[in-house]
Length: 416
Ligand code: RNT
Ligand code: ZN
Image 1 (cartoon, rainbow, N blue to C red):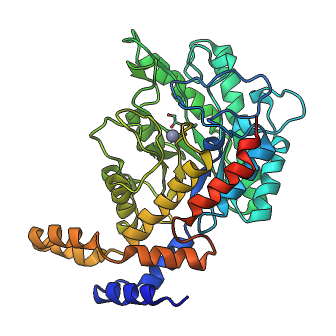
Image 2: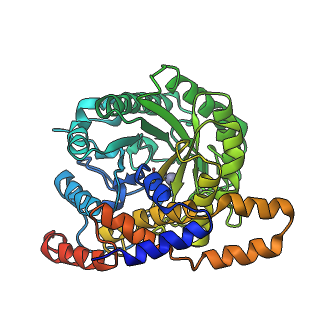
């Protein structure tokens, strides 16, 4: 099939001074960290694991959920066959593959060897997360800030163990691993002490991060939040807490766009953060009325976030990860939709005449700026996207949906 449509798009963008080839090249280099937990509703492989806790929730019971490492990895392979580019897989501690039960403070790199083998074979990177929820030691919703020193010790040791796993990932794969620390800690009702828990969290983090690990292999990120279900009144790890913590340590701020007040947008935070930090990290999600972790769609805020990353020339300064879990639709469809949308948003941003638009702003020509931004929405962006998919040997159009439906019939629906 000829590429007439792409050639037309290329010429059309060139009129604006935009090089579609450069955009495709930049996008191919961009690894997105694909969250393994979309495949099983944040379940994990621990033998006697209870239900999901920590103020987060996956709703729905669409059939075909992966029940073990083989099924989860098969589903990830399906996803990878339908998204362009080379990526990373984001693993949580509860996805360790152990013979017998191993408690989280005792986890070792060897318990994640299957993931390394999986990643190596496919040229992927790996990221890691301590899992500080869905565990008896987190039963009252407190972990690193717990008033009981024994509980804190358990979670501190868990976090230290996961840094070792992350270092192992980075060393084995030659791709920096992001170790993301998120804790559910908070209170349902107005607390009597807001300072104490944060002081304990700070001290716990200091201890966890005390060991210097080569940044080539591992970087540590800290993820804030505004509230969770059942912890509505107070969150220990708030945005201010971690922004200050990161500013005063080697840790990197991770911004999850579901974790702010509804009219507050992460896109606007990106340039401010990048002015003061060499690196930032993102969890891209979609909150509907609350931090509901809906599948990422190609909406205005996604595009706006991508634009900020591109305009700040920060593609290599932002660790991009997805974080959502929808159990009400086919989980592979959910995954593929989100990854492709994240990539589409980046491509959309890369195809904007950003310097020209900035110049309009500086000249004060807001009429042309507004009108141009609207016109750009109807530029032949889709043809460039399709060309990128074609070159990456993945479905360029909606035919990928049929492919997932077939997978559902042949594979997922047989899981009972
Ligand atoms: C929770 C945070 C956190 C989790 C994952 C599973 O609100 O977003 O990142 O979603 O660790
Ligand atoms: Zn998150």
